[in-house]
Amino acid sequence: MIPLNELQPTGIISNPDRGFPELIDNIMIRTFFEPVIKDKIGWVGVSYRISNKKSWTFKIQKEKGIYCLSFINTIKKKTPWITGVFNLQYFPEEDEKLLDMFSINENIFRADPQFYQFIRNAPENEDPLEYAFTVGKLLSTISKDENTIFISFIAPLRWRTIQIDGFSMTDKKGRHIEVVPPGSIDRNVPAFKIGWKFFDKMALTFCYHFKDYPDYVLLKKRYSHGIEISKQEPCLPSERYTITEYILSVGFSMYKTEERAKKEIRFANNHFPVFDFYPLSNTTSILWSYQRLNQSSYRGNPLWFEAYKWSDSLKETGNELDVQRYRPSLFIFTGFLGSGKTTLINSIAEYYSLQHNRFIAVIQNEIGTIDIDSTLIDGALNITTLNDGCVCCTVRGELRTAVRQVCLQYNPDIIILETTGVADPKNIIKELPSLSPFVKFDSLITVVDGKNLKKTLEEYPVAQSQIAHAHLIILNKTDLLNDEEIKVIEKMLTKLNNRAPIIKNSVKKMNPSVFLSVGETIEFFQKDKKSEPLFKGDTSEFHHVESLDIASIRLKGKFKKLSFLNFLKQLPNTVYRAKGIIQFDEDREPLLLQYVSGHYELSIFPEKKVESNLLVFIGHGFEKDVIEFKLKALLISD
Image 1 (cartoon, rainbow, N blue to C red):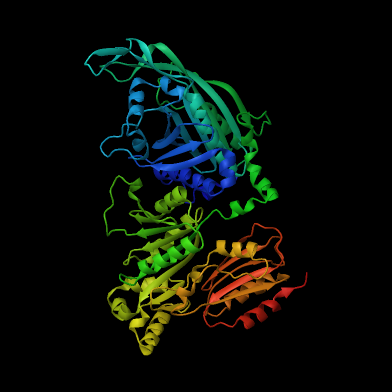
Image 2: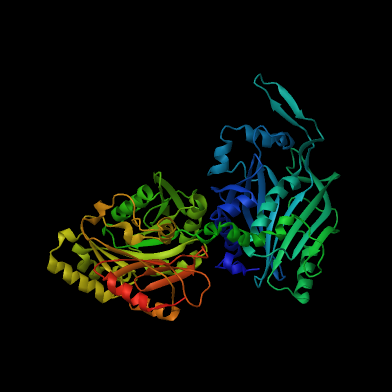
């Protein structure tokens, strides 16, 4: 089992009301970034439901209706365990026979022309679907050391409610029609069967991402009072009708010791919280159970015990590329008010979406400057569609929440975060580690208004911070400056940040090759086996100001790893970026290189065999021959 903090880096125990929903967010984002796995599990789609609760709607294979999962609260007791509680609903289609088994009121809701609108976006004043169509509760329970987790589903075998006074309606002519006779069943839903189909997908999802099969699987039951509804009391425990409640739990543990297992199974045997029904007694029956250490027979879905191996099978079938590339690249653009960030970002987004068929999400971080409708998802996002290849999202609140929602709802190839002009990038940089499960941070780019830089630096210290933290500085509006003024400004910028390259830009358009992402490098390597151009389409319009040098170098053999890393540290600052697929003497698999202004990252390249090393260098005024000569000196013979 991989540690829980790899799926939820910020932890759960410190803030469970936030941590439990974020765990669902993170695990679904990871799943939907891997299309092969998503389909194999049986997910079709997921979206956020805008309501006063943290809610998601799901479509799964072979089911007509829509599932809805909503976080309710946290159960904290004086035990080593803490539980997050989620309400599970199922909204059936109009032609499903299942609809007849729901209550009259639920059928009235279903017939409302605004039903689907209510599913997507709850009304501000009151949510008519807050509890309607409920089939059970999904629980996420973790140990306080965050080394054990149980995923559970509680529901009655059949959810029955009795109308004590009956239920009547008035027809168009004003006549009263008895729809449910007094003392009759109004709702008779096979709740556990409906909820099982969703829970099975969720359990499979956890098995896959934990890279382990369950340590525990238990199915328990108890007898509880049915529910009676009257005009005086909306919900009363019935003395005449009983129902059978089931709880199915799947547990994962970091520790595979007998001592730990005894404590965990003791908890699992007794874990049966009370929610929608009143138990007749404290008696609980274990129908069946599985424990890894006892080597008992597998229980539940057999796929729960196979999902952890799916990554290996993807490697064998050549589908591992999807697994490795699930995170979009994140570019952060900062710069003081009026520097020209928005115009520049628009041209970059347009280039990648139209010429490279990339889906771009632009997040505008306008914290403190505008007011967004409080009914939006967590108050975090306001989505505006720019064109077929872009969406623009305005953020109010926490960046992590916004990025997760964009990833899950839009699955972009590239995310561009445009900060407000008065934002200090230090605060955003602090959040980057928590974003690592679902984005690959690329670089922080600061746009500078050359004409007004001196005054801005004198009056606003935050502008100095924006420059100091940049990986790349774009000196904008140079058409308003003479050569001497440009030299003075470059000295000012270098004094604040002597590592970041400075690109001069006068017409607010530059070559987007500067922002080449890992995805483009992979495509180049796979499609361009010979010598096709790196960038396709007409990019001449981006060369008006300052042409970029793009050098592509292929070399056979393997590099000395330590020597190669020293080579990266000594690259001149005229090299803005470097991307590549390289082979080292001490690594069995090829690695992806991403280099930005002195910072580099290495990650595993999904293809096990490559014909040669490929390195792409982007900058201005560097000598390709010198770089190639130095690289050849680092190669060792096969």
